[in-house]
Length: 141
Image 1: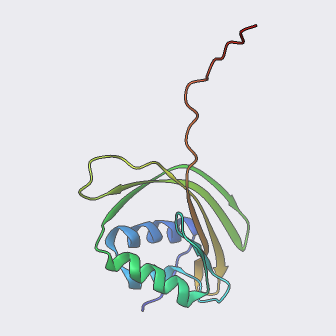
Image 2: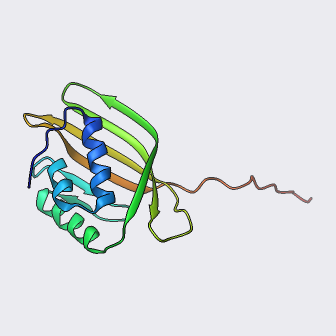
Image 3: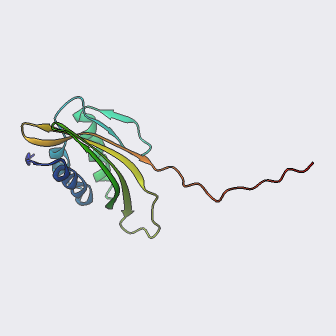
């Protein structure tokens, strides 16, 4: 596995989403910090901790042969010298499906290492349903 150097957390994030779209396990693993403290939560899934659990989850996802296209929106970045936190909405299209999927609310955390920026946490959850029209009620006496 080659270890690219990501000079900014935004570079690491772009590589992360490109790896998902290409279903490229080597590229995906190169983005993650090689640390037992890494955490990954896929939408509706359990919390995975450690590099081996993260590797196993992406292997399973990419082996499913389901191809995804992801557009990021509503990005909020909080960045310091050594840590960068990105809160984004992932707008996912499954290649071959017609109906759009609801957005996924995601937090990605990157850490600055000697080899550039690496992903430390990826936590993705389904977005809450938007409230429907307000209900009106009448009280009868």
